[in-house]
Image 1 (cartoon, each protein chain N blue to C red):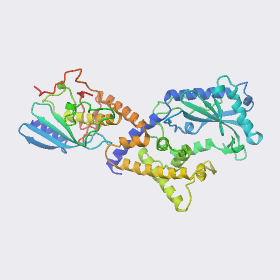
Image 2 (cartoon, rainbow over the protein chains, first blue to last red; image 1 turned 30 degrees about the vertical axis):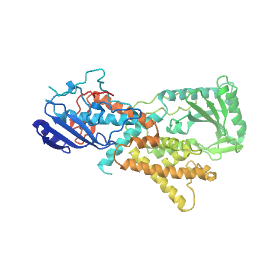
Image 3 (cartoon, each protein chain N blue to C red; image 1 turned 60 degrees about the vertical axis):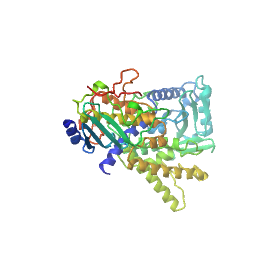
Image 4 (tube, rainbow over the protein chains, first blue to last red; image 1 turned 120 degrees about the vertical axis):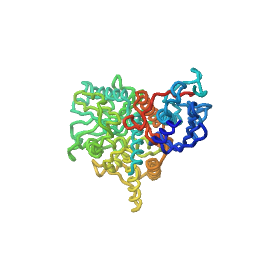
Amino acid sequence: MAAQIGRMSSKHPQLKLTLRRNTATWQGNWCPSDLSDSYLIRVTYTFRSRPVIAVLTPTLRLAEGKFKLPHTYMDSQLDICVHESDEWNSKLLIADTIMPWVSQWLRFYECWEQTGSWEGKGTNPEFRSHQSKPLA
Amino acid sequence: MDEQLIQRAVGLDSLLFEVCESLQLAPTQHQRAVDRYSAIARTLDSPNSPLNQIESNLYPQGSMRLRTTVKPIDGPHDLDFVCEFNISHTKVNPMALLNAMYKVFEGHGVYGGMVKLKKRCVRIVYKDEFYLDILPACRDHGNGGTCIQVPDRELGNWTPSNPLAYAGWFENATRHILVQKPSSRALAMDKAASVQPIPALEAAEEKTVLQLAVQLLKRWRDVHYADSTFPPISIVLTTLAADIYRGEALLSQALLLILEQIVERLNAAHAIGQRLRIPNPAHAEEDFSERWNSNLKAYSEFDSGVRKFAAEWRAICYGQGNPNRELERLFGEVVNTALIKQARSLQEVRERGGLGIRESGRIVPVAAALTPMLRNTNHGKE
């Protein structure tokens, strides 16, 4: 946990850290491109669980004719889904893995909400097992 | 401009290049235009053509020559050519020349059902995506240089023109400021004898900033005035843009300057109780905007439209956040095409491990990144 906190504060000091028992929460502004909105994001990491990524504001928009956000847990912007279960474990640093993945998700979301086309690829849990349980 | 605004302008430019690339003739369309142009030149010069007695030179004019073609929202591309006969107009009857050219095509096995006689030209209408207008012309020895005279059916007489001088003026106005380093994506030019080649099709990044600014102005016109009877004509927008442009390297900033200067010129004309006049830089007596004399509504629509566009464009350039919706409203569906192309390029670079992020979360090439982006799979239902 100390390594996670150290790396996040050195790379992204604008994300404010809150610590509660074995859970670290970082919250702050995130902007994936010069033509992007500024997103208020929250990353919640409970030791040995997958980090939960939430976009707090603005309310993300659905593309015309779509009924849910792509690549999210529970169809919610409060839990976006940027990796498969075997692509992340608690030995990997959030700052080095999850945070760049958040940027690409937001960037592809911006194209999707305008055009309806998700260009960031990904997998669909209806075809592969979708493990959102805590990591071993 | 501060660093943040420059970064935003660079981001906007990158999207606008994609928009302009989607607006111009597709490579296959361009090749088809070249083929058809060559076939028309052969027809005019064939032994059966009564026009083959006089030496002639066929060349593109208008957007094809200036490389500012814009795909119409509906309907075909309109490509203009001049067939210049090497004879003084004083020795030729203008209506007889126009009719003779019409008859060459009307009596032709291929073009017979495809030809229409227009005010100043003969139009060949193809079943697919464009038509070609061919203006017959004779040399204007009185005015000399590249001056020509073309028949005008409404006048029943000749009318002066000088498309080559206009094209030269426009080329100077571009100041040869390219949007990016030229690449070698140009298609081969057509080399038919006695026929000047159509300028090779160039990718948007091989064009000048001014050419792209003109394409954007024309597309805005097509979208904004979609329901108007008298949208501003291309030559008016092109001439204003070229006259105002001062060599800005950033496309979005060049467009802003052009729009705001048009508004200033409208204000200056209004202040002295006149309307904006747009003389032909290659022939000062000709006013490209003469139709506004008899159509005040068209002038008023141009005035209000360009003021609105200038204000909206300033808000996009100097604002913050995602401008995609505003851009789509200004330039139409082509913005979405550009966004998808851009996202696909990003995905390709991402798959090659070429991306990373900065402290703010901004995605940058990996060489400029604080953190490289490792491979990942966005998971969950689409």
